Image (cartoon, rainbow, N blue to C red; front, side, top):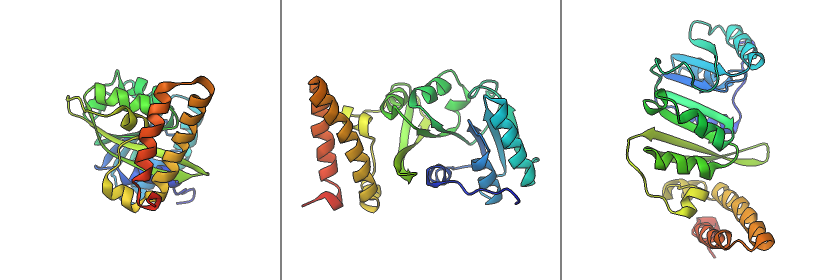
Length: 229
C-alpha cells in the first residue's frame, strides 16, 4: 500500500452507501474510492472511469502501486458511455455538478440496473427533480463536511415509479428523522446555507418563490433538535 490515500469525509460518506461488491466510479481521478473499497475488503471488483487521459493515468498508477490491477479496471470514457454491458452493483458519481450527473445518467441503461450514489457539487435540486420525474427512488440522503463545506450524498435506485416531493424537499433534500436526530448540527448548517442563498434572491430580486421556499426550509430547520427553543 505504497500510495494508499484514505478518502476525505465526502468520499467516505459515499463509500458507506455502497451496497454490493462491484462498483463503477465515474470521474475517478486518482481512483481513491475504488482503491479504498478494495483494500478494505468491501468490494471485489471496480471500474475506474474518467473522460480525461491525465486523471486516468494517475488512477492507473495508484491502482498498480496498491497491487490492485487485477481488481480495478481503468476505462477512458465520458460518463457511463460504453458500459451498458457491465453489471455493477453500485455506480458512484461524485464531485460533479448536478446537471452533469443528470446528463450522465439520462442516456444510460446500466444506471437503471445499479444502485446509484450521487454527490452533486451544485444544483442538487435539479438532480433530485430529474430522479423523481424519471422513475428513480431517492432511497436516502446524507451530508458530509469537508474543507469547510457541507456536501449532499444521494442514494437512488430505479423503480419506474414517480415519487412525490414538495418543492422545499427538492431544494433541501429529504432526511429521515433518525438521521436528523443524530446529525442535527450538520443538517442545520446545510439548511442555513440554503436559507442564506434564498434570502439573497428574495432581497435582490423580490423573488416570491424564493421567499416561500425560505419560509418552508426555515420551518425544517426549526424542527431540528439543536434548533428548538
